Structure formats: structure tokens, C-alpha cells
Amino acid sequence: MVTPYFPLVLYCIGSAGTLGTTMILSLISDALGILTLHTYVCYLLATTVFARLLKLIGSLFNLFRGKRRNILRNRTDTWNYDMDQLMLGSILFTLVTFLFPTVTVYYMLFTLTRLGIIGMQACLETILAFLNHFPLFALMLRVKDPARLPGGIELRLKISETSPATPLSTKLELVVRSFYPLRGVC
Image 1 (tube, rainbow, N blue to C red):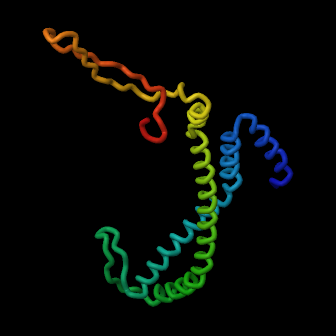
Image 2: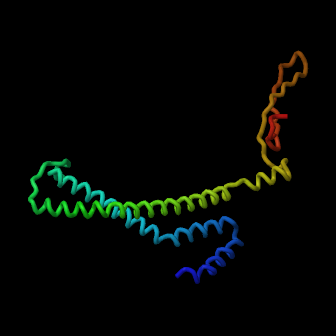
């Protein structure tokens, strides 16, 4: 169903390349999220079925032990079950026991698929963040014209003596450095 539109999608992403690499990466990340939406729905279904199956196994195990969950007191109380209830419980427990490995495999499959998709999107987002915050201008300016980079302000105390009879006069001299040296102070 998607195969006929695949060249069109590639053309749109490629033509968005005129807007930059980050635009391409963003479109690929969004396309990955949209194209794998069905696996996310399957993951949600498998998670729901797996959780309900575990809850059902716990309830049937309590049935065999003669226990029942008391919601009002938030504890497990003893309970006398009829023979019909125990028979139905054994049939359901057998069914659930044989279904459990199948549901577990599907749960693991969709969980690992979802983790892989999240991992790919995380890699794309990390590359995107790196490209957005990379100080390319400052590095190129450092190589081309380092005097244009601000390096800081330094204040030096300047003491001047005019004659022994007059007191010392002090002034602050402002020294502006054009850039910080890379390998220590020269």
C-alpha cells in the first residue's frame, strides 16, 4: 500500500534538503513515527492482553488456593468455592496456561520492535540536537580571524608616583583581550 508512494516520499524529503540537514533529519524522524504507527498500536494491544492475562493467572491461582481478593479491605481473604466454580476455574487455568507462552512471545516481539523504533528516533534526535547546537560559526571565526572573538576584560592596578611630597595615586587600567589563548596564558 505504501510502496507506490515511496518515490514521492523520497522526493519530498530530498527536496526539503534545500532547507538544511536538520530539516531532512526531522522529516525522517517524523516519517518513521508515522510509518510505524501500526506497530505502536500492536504494542499497546499486546501490552494490554499481557497485563490482563497476568491478572487472570493471579486470580485463578487464588481460586485454587481457596482465596479471594477483598477490594474493600485491600487484602486476600479465604473463601469457599462451589464445585462448578472450581471446575470452570481449572478449565480457564488450563487455557490461560497454554496461551501464556504465545502472548508472552508477541509481547516481547512488539516490545523489542518498539524499543528499536524509539532507539532510532533517539539517535536521530541526538544528531539533530548536535547539529542545532554545534558552534560552527565560533570555530570558523577562531580559525579565520581570532581577533574578532571576545576574550574578556582584565583590570590592572596602575600606581604612579609624581614626587615624594605628594601621595601615591592609583588608577585602574582596562585591558581588553581579543580572545582567550587555547594553550595557557602567553
